[in-house]
Length: 117
Image 1: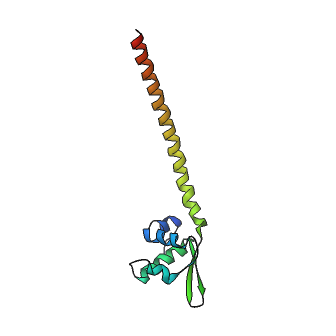
Image 2: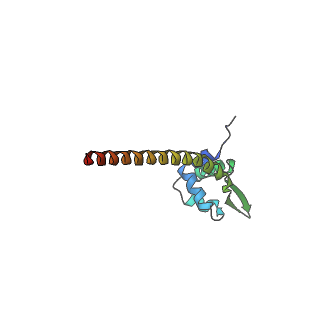
Image 3: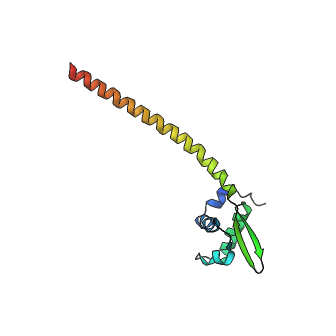
């Protein structure tokens, strides 16, 4: 039994990220996608299959041509996951900044007190 694919698996590979970038603006012919990479068409077909299984693209037949159309809503899962860590680290960095500023203020205050003695 094959494991369920998710959007994180899709974006883990640089070739798949490049394909997403290519189709983000408009549908692109499968052959045009394959021509952009120095790998076999079979390898590109596998990447397209993974992107399709992850819900990031649809492949539509138009006459004899197949076009890949982006479905980028699924990238919201990645955004939400990253955003939680962004908020966490922003909070921690603000706390660190506040701590450093307090330490500097205390240090200046102590230096001023010593000079005034």
